[in-house]
Image (cartoon, rainbow, N blue to C red):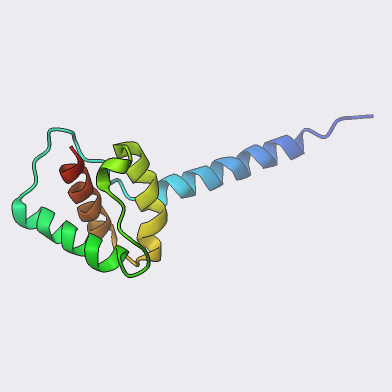
Length: 100
């Protein structure tokens, strides 16, 4: 009996496609640790955080999670809050700025 080697190849191609799609659709929101943002920019991030996120739940304390954890949290929550990429980045940068 001959083994079918096509199935593993199809699975690997599918897994790669799903991973590539997931990665490419995730906004690049991680800020440089030493990057500085204007007061106005961070105030906009704060306003978006308070107005968009508090509609559905209590706001978490920014210091409760690491920078990496916030990346994942916001990747999940930003689409639910209907944030665009810029708003997503502003909220992330605001949270990171107040937690550090």
